[in-house]
Image (cartoon, rainbow, N blue to C red; front, side, top):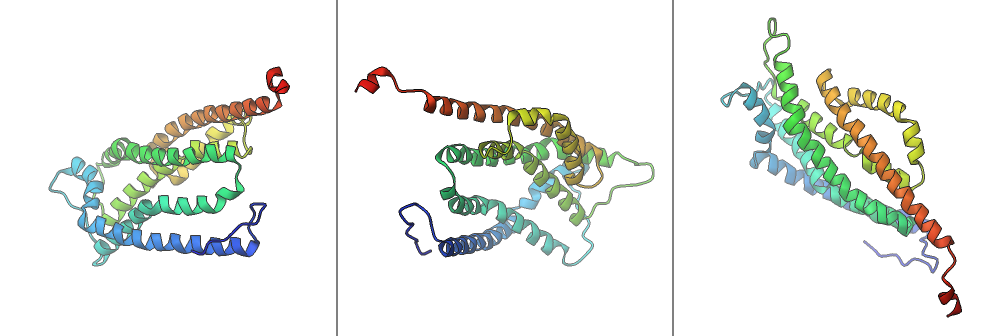
Length: 266
């Protein structure tokens, strides 16, 4: 990627911005292509689908398999989730290019908060996926299997099961990003702790709607399992916003205080 020399003011001409954006997009697309190939190989040769299949076998037995209705289902399921895993593998690279493009426009105080929040976002996403895999998914599958057993018996297809499982894991990972979003908005001055406290009831209503929309299928149990951590994360987000604004007020107060007499005399 060609390097551009900024002017003395630290600014870059508009066409140079477009050139940098073009290269950032190209590098990100290349990373996605490589990640998709790596993800496909991991799913096909690394038994990644076996990990997703473990909760099903724990419920129905080790000798159970899923139904495959189309000749191409096995291949396209492997391809689809290989691309998804590849995207997750190269997501830090994509974030790096987005950050490299936007960072020059941010203040140092904003960078000091946003950079740790990106690492925290990765940790929270992993925690959300783990909670879904070890808690939400087994509870949900057991609930579904035991529902209306008098007139229906479960015969799930591979397409439906893996689609449901992946959607549940990704949904939990996404909703755990709430504190990161609030941190960034607080740094940019778009939300305040007072605003977050005042809108708590509206936030709970919105959390209910979001949980209902992103939960796979029409399972009320999944919606409830999403609502509880979301409400806890919202309260945690208020605490983070308070910390950010306190530090900002301390910096403003320190800048406003006159230097000591000894310093003035020197």
